[in-house]
Length: 72
Image (cartoon, rainbow, N blue to C red; front, side, top):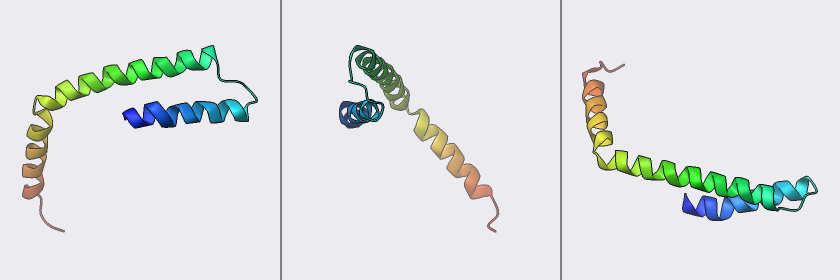
């Protein structure tokens, strides 16, 4: 994700600005930083959730249910 935000998003902003005949500047930089902040917060929350083992518990539960289903 860091590579996407650090590279791909910046390239996309420049590409869109070029297509629209604009120079990337303060409004675009502000939006770029806003997206980065949102992604950082989301990443931290998801990491905490993943570290709880919730995904493993849910995966085990779903696998158990799948084994009870009749084969086609």
